Length: 167
Ligand SMILES: Nc1nc2c(ncn2[C@@H]2O[C@H](COP(=O)(O)OP(=O)(O)O)[C@@H](O)[C@H]2O)c(=O)[nH]1
Ligand SMILES: [Mg+2]
Image 1 (spheres, rainbow, N blue to C red):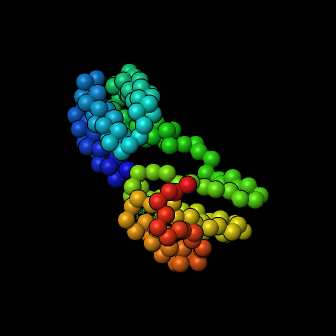
Image 2: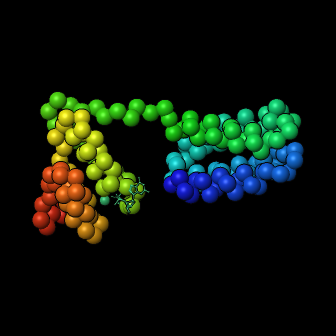
Image 3: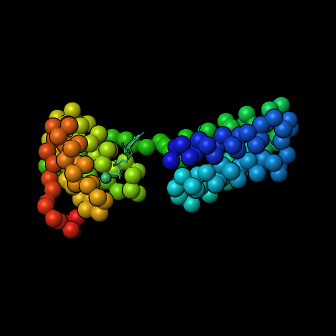
């Protein structure tokens, strides 16, 4: 996601930079590219919409349009608002005393399996006793991938031979 976003932002900045004083219309073109790259990076439509509203409002403000290098200012505004939609978040794990089940959901290849290994290690370092459960029964070799990960980390993996129902 971030690679795609970075490309989009770079071309947006390039389109605005070096134009001297920005007009409302070429700034809108640049922001359009930012909007497209957020949507292509799977950021939700409502989050993109409120992001665009805030960025546009600030970017079209008089102080930006009249400044010596408006593109730099726009970059700063986009940056601040990106930080805003990505956070602040509570990144701590809330584990129960007995058993806590963490389910990872996401598109294929988005990093669920890898993240589950990282989480298991983190939980073990915190004194917990993690177990990985293979519930991706769709992707070829997904169960095997989890077993390999579990072996590398020394963390037990639960799976059922021939299972078709993740529940
Ligand atoms: N660069 C990078 N690659 C990652 C990260 N997490 C996962 N990957 C890679 O992305 C690919 C898919 O990851 P995987 O965990 O199998 O995704 P899943 O399909 O959601 O379970 C693998 O090649 C991983 O090595 C990460 O944080 N950074
Ligand atoms: Mg997986």
